Image 1 (cartoon, helix red, strand yellow):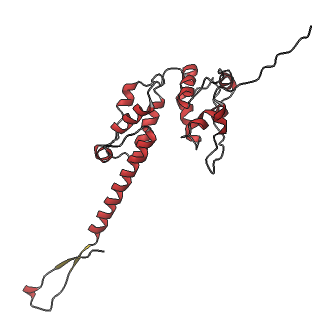
Image 2 (image 1 turned 45 degrees about the horizontal axis):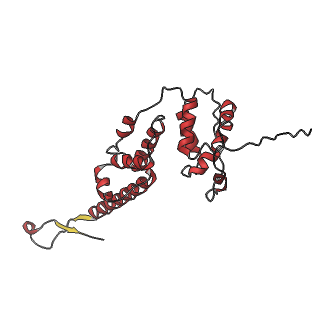
Image 3 (image 1 turned 135 degrees about the horizontal axis):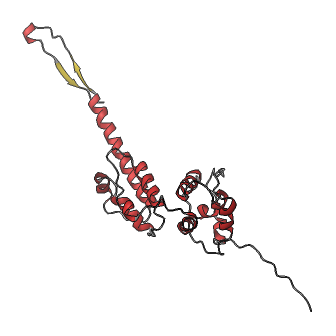
Length: 223
């Protein structure tokens, strides 16, 4: 009787198409800070640090594909044991990671996310960063990307929202880009206004006439 040995081959937890996604031009693979599964750091801290180190962080497939490089020990073993094709997006992988290693003391709720508002002196970049950080701590909240975009839009300052009325946003990145453009145009307008104000000079002219007819002549010079 022939005895045939069965061979087991490792199958990745994400689609093979993810491996064909090219790196952005000039991308360099960073030395990721490792998470072992027994860290004193929270899962939130690790995810935040991982995305900060990953320059191509906006590309869904690369986030998933490179995440194992930030793991070691039992955390890497957990990733390797994920069922084949069980991960279809970064959001799904992040959710599973939090569910497996999360300790519970840093979790936020949907109410925390909906209450995020851009403050008076806060830039669009800082506001969107704070919004994303809050979302990353809502481990148990499942929300569609378009709904997230709506929340990010609603949190913008009123004068920016007024300029963006009528646009359809499907991602937070789209909200970020449009709001940043409005902010930059507003800054340019303010700079131009200050420049014209600074071009107003007070010139003292001593006229060749009697003292009582002498006067200060104010001239506005526009460049």
